[in-house]
Image 1 (tube, one colour):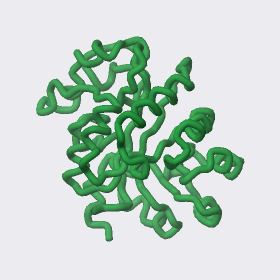
Image 2: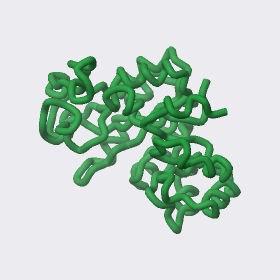
Image 3: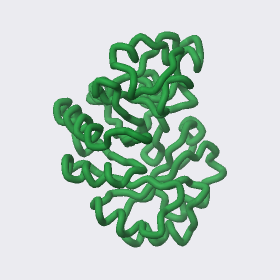
Length: 241
């Protein structure tokens, strides 16, 4: 099993992003991690999708938050990627947890929060789905750019690992990580410095980078102590020792 690579959005170069097809592709590569995004439909269903709207990744249009689950299920979320994936649907968080339950794969679930979203409701609904699913908590890592969401998740799901997302690691990173009793610090690989990496590792946190699609660009990062690399192209890392 490939333990240090996570398939970004389920493997966005292998299949339509954030779909069950992508998750199956990641499992076929024997990856130990996938990274996916979730936000709420108009009727409060945690849906696996990255963008604020469905426009880019389906044949529909409009904001996810304005569409009901039944409406989302009418959309083709695969043909934009390749006709081989025609009629692929946006999955719910519940469906993903069900699919992944018998697998050994771990899930980095990013809480995707756009302007105007109800943070409390998202955290409550995600908590409800996870608890009802029976999915092993030790195989989940919840992350978000939104610190408030991570503080709420700490209260609602205290035994699930938490990671704070930044593009560039914040100056007050230690305070933020301590506030959520974090497992990991997440940042864009291009903006990570060796000094920052050393500091994060010395403080006892896991260090996770995104979205490195060329293994040659992050060869030094492994020496700096990066624990997990999130990538659209996990297949390019298959020869990594």
